[in-house]
Image 1 (cartoon, helix red, strand yellow):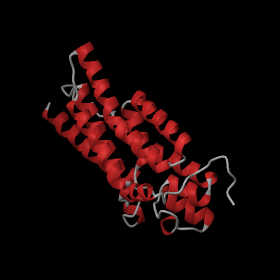
Image 2 (image 1 turned 180 degrees about the vertical axis):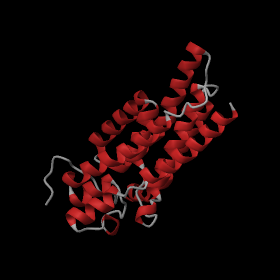
Image 3 (image 1 turned 120 degrees about the horizontal axis):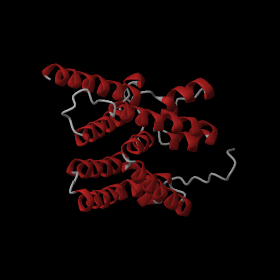
Image 4 (image 1 turned 45 degrees about the vertical axis):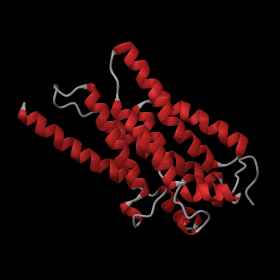
Length: 225
């Protein structure tokens, strides 16, 4: 049993490295440079993410970036879900490991080793990772994002509001689980609060521009000049 325990811990360690490396794939930087001759980090909000790609280069550039960034988080967490080498480890333990994989992939996106540790804000990667952990909650947050964006046309505000709603949804979800099965996940709640705080921190410049009325609006139905 000791052998399987140590093998499990080694697998977890390696998969956390893989999660960080997956998160570090700088899709916005590579696509911007290779197909448009632009380092996206030098334009717009100087953020290497799908939103800035949309703002600067349009939907054709932003869509593949979002898909790749989403898959980075989704694959990283899905891989971690296969770690069950020791049968004594519970399903709750695996869920906790998935949450750690979420953090590793998002940190990789924000501080990518393949792009000089200058990355994006981690929203797309976070969405993909959370979808792998609990798709229903990810769908609810996405629905909130869509509603806020449709009415305001501010991607940053939509991301902030959806991120702040995430811990609320997690508490409701955890309470429902407790009422049904007597199991309550404090780790998931702490994680969701950390996500909300991280989004507020990474969007602090956007919050300042929103308060000053300087944040750029995005209208998907308008042609990019």
